[in-house]
Amino acid sequence: MTRARRVLVTGASGYVGGRLVRALLADGLDVRVLVRDARKIQDLPWSTKVEVIQGNAMSLDDVKAALKGVHTAFYLLHSIGVGPDFDAIEERMAKVFADAAEQAGISQIVYLGGIANDKKMSKHLSSRAHTGEVLASGKTPVMELRAGIIIGSGSASFEMLRHLTHRLPIMTTPKWVSNRTHPIAIRDVLWYLTHAAELEKPVSGIFDIGGAEVLSYAEMMQKFAKLSGLRKRIIIRVPVLSPRLSSLWIGLVTPVPTQLARPLVGSLINEVVADPNKSIDSLILRPPQGLIDVSTAIELALTRTNENQVETRWSDATAPTAPWQKAQGDPSWAGESMYYDRRETLADAPLEKIWESIEEIGGERGWYGADFLWYLRGLLDRLVGGVGLRRGRRDPKTLRVGESLDFWRVEAIEKSGDERRLRLYAEMILPGKAWLEFRIKRVGDKTEIVQEASFAPRGLGGQIYWYVILPFHAFVFPTMLRNIVRSGRRKVLFG
Image (cartoon, rainbow, N blue to C red):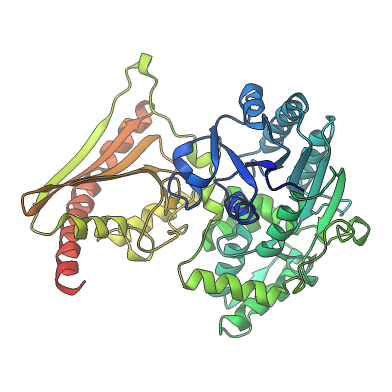
């Protein structure tokens, strides 16, 4: 294989895609990425080392442009958790990609799907399998790698496992916790994907990839508890928790929102175990050190999490039709309105220290006061199917454009000379669109801070919502601004 081989990665802003790009670059390949919004990857360490194509995966022309001159394309797109019609969305995307690949004349598609060997498959696994069928319906060879639960710092499956085990020493669980699973470490997934890009000849077929051992979800929780220094969890199995009820329960206890938990749980009701007849060993040898066992995978993920070295997270990826992103303001022809809550002050602290305090907002740090009200708003959001506050943040000190921050997403970060700007977009369920923005600039030996909440209401309900929450704004936002200034002052004194 020539090292000049060009590969395309779709879903590069997602959990697996973001790590795969780094791994492919480390192997010396020429990497191109197709992203919906190039700003989402501008702060990633590899962003200047790849060719970036901004486009829509639903557009045949955009996908063809991204595939021009490509040898191998990684298809890592999915619509998990975007609502009841996610399977139709996935089918359309796969069809567009298959047609574009055929017209562009690429040599290989590599698709990461889910293990689907049980006769009674969930809707999620059925859609994953059907996506592979649609991709393979064209003339381009498709190598479909099917994985089960992926264990790694920041993965949705790992976060669900971690929070369930930590928060519930005694739990009543559905029968599916006894089903056999075949988890695999993210490092082993990346091993197979990167080596798939280096095969000498195109390959067509379905290959299951599993980790070093098969065990039940309950056994995984007990392993996690032991490795975390927790007592053995008491698990009481009950037959009445349906996948729907289970996903509601997971949505309340873990950072994974109900809409995403539902397809994950739906997958767990089946046995997700690799079929030895679909082994990839004849094409790609296992890592020299062997496949990583579950305990080691959990230890690696915990270490990364505890050291704040989580490279990508499940919440990095966004889908335009996700329930928490459906909010929109009134159309311009209907007289779109915008409401503002603007606060400003002149702080006797250096701009750099004030910016540090602003960039540390959210997550374990909280929102600089009135944390009970923030917690209550997050809880209400989760009760209606939103993401709530539990997504936290990737790193306690720094933010990147495109990443999630509690129930916000970082929309813009600007640093130029004596000015700084942070803009957050609300992903909570709202009757409209909302932003929270901080702008600071140096004024002599002081720092001017502008803190602005803005809201574009949707219909009468949105306008009523704004006026209902105004009394809370009158307490929350002045408190936030005062405490940001105090934090900046403390940083001057104590570092």
